[in-house]
Length: 162
Image (cartoon, rainbow, N blue to C red; front, side, top):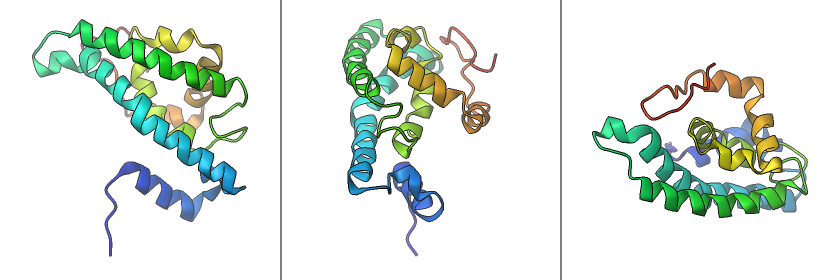
């Protein structure tokens, strides 16, 4: 028996078995679009967001000051990536089209933490990205997951549990 260890592979495996529609099974084009946005999240958005989060939220736990130059550099790059999201989301409600998919859900964790920083304004400045985020965060399952994702750590300007 093989053991899966990568979260996106695990998610795809579970969804193939239980909720294949979240993988865009309506057509090959939908499935490819889901896969494409999963790759964008993994290789474009998440590395930048995580670099920001390490400095803004976790640096105090690492026993050091925030590297604001690194934050500023990654925020500028993140803005450019989110402009691509804004263009896409001006055409459809969700990333892969007008249906919720793993492409959207895979963003929840990193976006949850970004929205706990002062850089939430980067998302809020983009009306389609912000509406997309708010619709994801408002889902009952997302609210339940968020309960296990505290953001009341040093460097975080707010608590999402409020």
